[in-house]
Image (cartoon, rainbow, N blue to C red):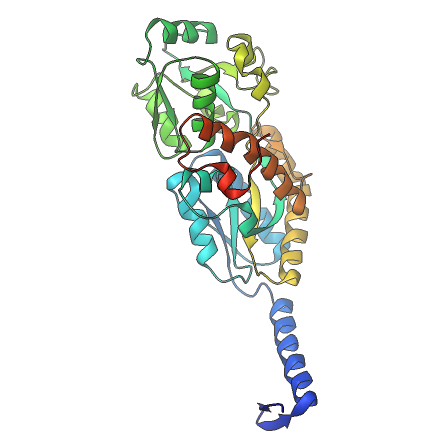
Length: 344
């Protein structure tokens, strides 16, 4: 026996009634998707102002806004290496009005026990951009080369200081690589954001840090920072005479390159029609000449050749390397095996 329903004040019953109700629900969902977007879209970042993710997002947002047809408002929700912003985005309705502009850290949240979420709790839209990581010191630092810094660290174990953003973030991973794989004994302290980590170097609180090259151009041109090495096994693509870190810390070679691209995500459950609208607008924004000019002028590299499920596969491979490194070195409190993350 089938229940009785009411549609627009008229009662319907039986199998026909079920199809009427289903049709009405589908029509409502389709209408909602067709109206998208009808109000502002929030672009959420788990990081503070001034870092590589924030800079890219604030250039991307107005271009993306033009193609999606709604105002796009950048919201910084910093803290816990991006977990606060990621958790916030996940608490919002799955309606496309909250989009997460993410860095790499959701790949490590679970093993670091900062959040139960990961990349697969979201629908991937596209990768966005990447920026080289470099080792820098203040311009008045006594260290002229990476070899000088390595020698000082070895001469004074535990005394040379390094700043990074937060647990499990790119700077933390690089510190671990240098400490555990490179055998360098230095002090590492989190400062909450890339901008704060740089200020710690400029203010003399620490001796060195590892920012994205795209965020330090003004400091370089003003003569306030000196680059010692590219955190890769090749020279910098943007600054001449910046050697790879492997020249002076060859033990890092098997782990490099290790990139940290940004990506665009929406909450699971977002209607496919809305996901498609977001994807189409993002693809047009990333193909826009203004975005290409930003990449070139600010020393970023486009990464939007990776889209959809390929984004998740990229982070799965990345997590396999990084999460096991964090765990094997006693940094991650939870085993990657608990989350079915295979060893590389």
